[in-house]
Structure formats: C-alpha cells, structure tokens
Length: 155
Image (tube, rainbow, N blue to C red; front, side):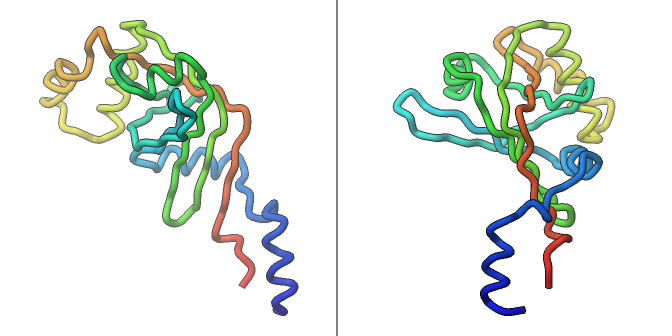
C-alpha cells in the first residue's frame, strides 16, 4: 500500500467503528474504566474506577468528598473509556446523574460484588465498607460512542 493511501486511510476512521454488540462486549469484559471531568480551574482530569451495567446502562460510584463528584455536580459531562486487548476501545461521551438513593446504591454494590466474582463470605464485609451514606451512584447517559476496533485494520 502506498504511503499516500495509508495516510488517507487514517483521515476517515469510520471503517474501524464497532457495532452495538461489540460495544457491549467491551464494556462487559472491562474490569474497570477511566472517567473524566473538568476541575474548577479548567484542568481536564481522569481516574480509573469500577463500573457496573444495570438496566442496560453503565453506572458509576463516587463519594461526596472527591473532586470528580464536586465537578460532576457543577457540570455532569464526562467521558468513560473502556479497553479490551482483543476487541479495542469504547469511549462513552455523555453525562452522569448522581444520587444518594440507598436502594440503588446497595443494588450497584451487590452487582459490582457479583461481577468481580468475589466469594460470597466476603459480601458482608464489602457492603459494610462500601455501602455508606456518603456514597453516590448514577447512570451515564450516553450522548455518543467513540469506538475503535483494531481487528478491522488494513494490513
């Protein structure tokens, strides 16, 4: 392939997009994800967190004393990045709506515990540590996906 053709191929990445099924596979297989927010001074920030899928949506958790929580209350926009060595990467561009709802929080934490395949005897200790009044959970409302499927690369 000529260098001109190679360069032109990278201008349009649409051939490397994932279908909905592959997007869901990447999210389901990911052990965690990176979330982003903008600090008060405008600095973009990101950190790795645990996530779960409930009712077809990605849910996240945080506590009130974290900078990302304060930022999301000011501006709920976020990007959530997942990666899978085989399938590629998925970025959700969207917003998050956090709640202190105890029932949703407990459901989130039980789902997280189950997803991680941790042994049942540890559930009580996990919930005692994590299921606190200061913990919030919330779904990410997807505005769009940015995806890259490396299996579709032209050789």
